[in-house]
Image (cartoon, rainbow, N blue to C red; front, side, top):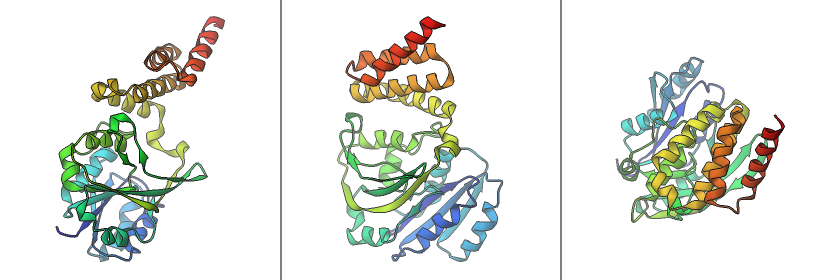
Length: 284
């Protein structure tokens, strides 16, 4: 639908934080949006809380069995009416002026529009800006964090949408596929329009097992692209080593640390982890 932006919020047992996310959309000065809330099987009070918002005909609510955030986002796109889409997590919120600014720049001239983020991770505040990404992203200047980017729906669908098997890093996995589309028109806004908050200890997708499975899938799925970007490959191999070490599997950790070192020998952290694991291995 012309001039309509579809905002998609996937949510699971976020009854306490969801109202703030919804209110941050309702409080926008421009009104050319629809809100689609995909309840991914919540068993808390989410359904009752959302009912109060359905008085506004721009707000839509769908309940489904729990299948994960990626599938929930894809469902949101499936039922959306807008030609442009923004994904917002149910514990984050938009800052004032976002939709006014999108209209001001005539967002329909672009495939992607990215903006700055006010981040709070485990209580620490910082500003996240779109920046030049690695070779695997074709060195695009962008950010793929949910809530910090507006996609042309046509581009999202052309890239294939979210991978339902990714439960961690799914935004940037999608970003890899989008970045490798040709002729993208990207607009960067040098203002903060998202308040992003994480308590990593209570984040389900931060579980080591989830992160490990998603990173292994990432490497397997984009193996050829990673081979062309040794920096990104070494970082991913290091991350796999780190996660195996967190699981207590030092043998597998050492294998991936060694791979990371061979891929990029100047990566100092890798050398330190290899030396450490070999030392404790000799002492056992």
